[in-house]
Amino acid sequence: MIDNSKRANNLSSDSANIESDNVEPGGEPTARRPENLPLLDLILLVFCSAIILASFLMQTQGPTQVFLPGSDTPMPEICSFRRLLHIDCPGCGLTRAFISISSADLPRAWSFNPAGFLVYILIAFQIPWRSYLLFRWSKKRPRVEVPYGMAFVVTMAIALVFQWLVKLVILIF
Image (cartoon, rainbow, N blue to C red; front, top):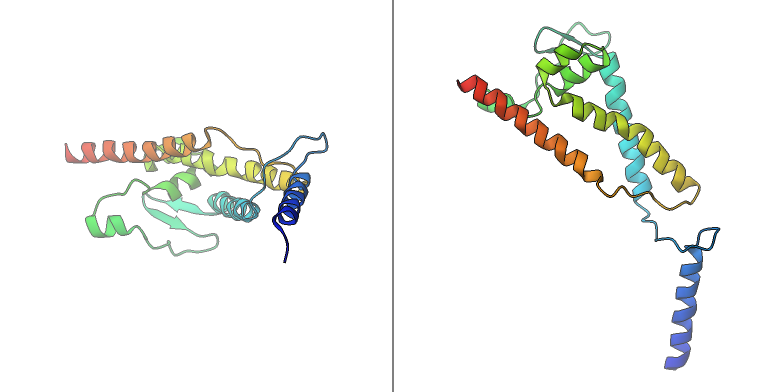
């Protein structure tokens, strides 16, 4: 049976070991690094890279058709919102806008979805940002937190809904 003083000594030595693991070379303590964040960063890096790469490889024809590289058959329309309600959803046209942006056809990208520019920038920015975060993780440096990182995501979501509402008002009147 261990008495309370030994238990307290063991707990304090364990916490000292934990704190010593989280000290920068200059002696500054760092916050604990969550173990799942590098996996999230890697998934987002691969996902965003695939989206941008696909936008360079795919082609559009006409106002609604999207083609995979080397295919003569257009991809099927997959927007359930459009199929059920017969109107575009806030994200309709993003794929075609991305393809047009990657092809430097900016007026056409704007006609597909004006908010596509913000979404494209957000996704393209994730590639160097997630690479940087993974690099810092590999060097055991503390994670860089952006104080207003979600502000851009919220702005993008608002822009998607706003442009959709404008299109609906134009469609109605």
